Image (cartoon, rainbow, N blue to C red; front, side):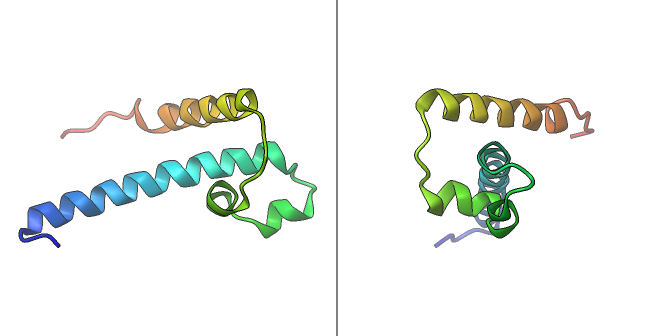
Length: 84
């Protein structure tokens, strides 16, 4: 429980950031594991694949997929200029 509004806003912001990163990694993992023609590609969301499916993939494949997801994430968000 948060006693101040600013603490609650920070907590919600952190939750949204964690959700977006998890969703981004899950979607990249789903694209790598289930090609676009596969029925499971449409059946499972990326976040479901990441959290619930518990697929057995090698550490090298998981590292490659996570680096690919973080590279696309950084291209979208880290290069953006803001006035903050």
